[in-house]
Length: 176
Image 1: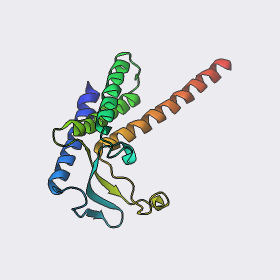
Image 2: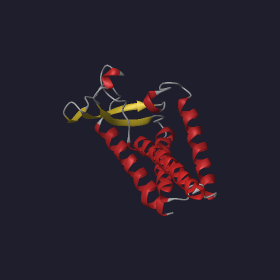
Image 3: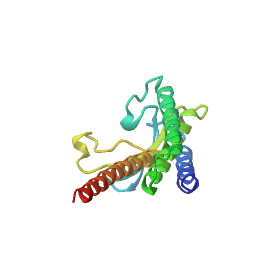
Image 4: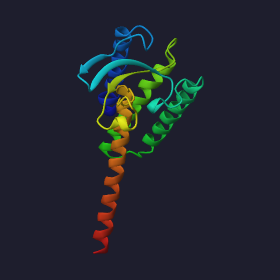
């Protein structure tokens, strides 16, 4: 429970509050508002509607909210089942799962809010060398929930690598 109250809920609240503030600051549909440049030629706040997933994949698809809503609910169900089976025994994976749940709930909430039906993205960065992928040089806009999901994925990979290293060290010690 400490992970839920210490990580998941505060980050979910931060995600929803920041999205609310963006919607208040940029009340018109995208394309009618000028982004706010926070760090010159590097970071802007803007309002982007995303019905799809990462990098805007399936954005605009009329079934995207249903598809990703169901995927989010399935993912949450699997996480609960795995948590109850103690599949996440160490603190690092528990933090990763808490972040993941926060991100899933944050974006799922956006999809189901009546009258919205899209995820609010607003963090807009222009990255060095990204112009090789997108001529504008802007990385796709994202939000706090997306950040939680990406950090969770990184922590899970790190934890898996750490587990492989520990397993190899144990095998080496037994062989010696």
